[in-house]
Length: 626
Image (cartoon, rainbow, N blue to C red; front, side):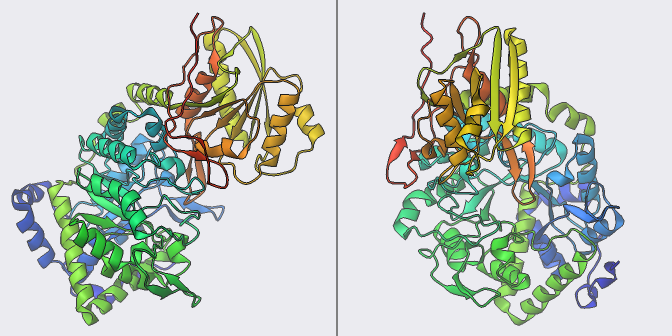
């Protein structure tokens, strides 16, 4: 096993290994924050400055006894030495790191105890809905669900709950809100992570979220500059290109960033997307292919537009550099150097710090930057500028390393009051897109309901909440379920006919349909022939109905499972499915359990994109008079 003997003498020979700053010292530094930041950076070694510019993830550390990556859940000597001896300024935590409240508090306390100087930025992505990191916590139903409520107060409430829980655990920066305008319904990575395809609604809700989270000592970071909403590929695996002209970008993508920056945003996260209208320069990939310059590496975008034109002087944080868009196309040392030269302040996850072997790559990166800074005064200037910006932000925010109180954290995180509010918000969001006298479905004393989706866990979750509804309404619901890949073409008409036979109601739960979802259509056709009521539940993006014909009833719930796309870990968003199912049913007195209140926060267009099928603001209601 390679150990920390790999630390390079050329970097560390002249370092003064200062002890971590105490709270008493921090209190003194806070008295004149600008002067203190200048003094701190002036006395830093080159490695200490570089350390402030890195935010690393320790999602795993080495392998378990079965040879699988072992989740990093508690501090060990190796990681502690990496944080201390490389003077790391920031760490980001993921779902793999966060088992429950006691473990999370202990891990964050240990991380802070390992620091070499200033307290660490401890960050995570608790966007709500589709992207949530806490296994035990209040997720809230997600941004597009908030868009469907049209209620700025609920966006502020979401920010307050996230801020209260994250700060109680020891986090001090949350990577959100997403201010991308989702103006491409085929967008594979944003979708329900966006509030809307309407820039004004994005502006209003994102800034209310910031207002809420700022009630606690937590920084926010806008995602993903210059706008990730109009892409058709995922930067986790590809290098997306946005072909909007400059005028369109300035009228659509730019305004929410500009508005949020004027209303308290603390940081901006870059996007690994190519926008030729903003930067026409070409660079070469590792294979020699000539491509446009991703925004994360683009000085015209980060410096000329964000810094100079918008007069933004806060933190610029890269999106994760280990994503395919960067890692698969460019030498990482070069990419980090280029991003810093472009204007980035914090480089997020330039190396997968998942094992002992990664230490040598980290050491090599420090060495590369130190050598290049000596040769290139512009890089040296940028390192100094960014180190000062990071240090100043820590002092301005009065970031501390004080141990987190576990008793308080356990009272706050996932409290009953927070979970009740989560359900209240999700109930406001459910949108009835279409209804031909199917809904609300009045439950009888005995009901046979078939649940169909792409995945068994999704079916199980739906069946669980149907059982809760049965208990509440004092009826019997017998459920059966079937796992069918709805986007594929594998069912025969006879199989579909047999599947739907003898059911009282069918719940067809779709998940981002596209092109020709033959199996889903066949099930709908056979149910219609048999005159069996069928409801399509669009469980993530609301656009699924655009790819189906003869749907009699359809609701959008804006999320049923969260999905950490960086590592294929799913988690249930129970509040969305709970509220969605309650919207479908009425009790024996024909009173809906949750009348639909949501309005579409996006236009739903036909697959060709040239016709609006259901416009922004559409949302049906139930007529329960009499």
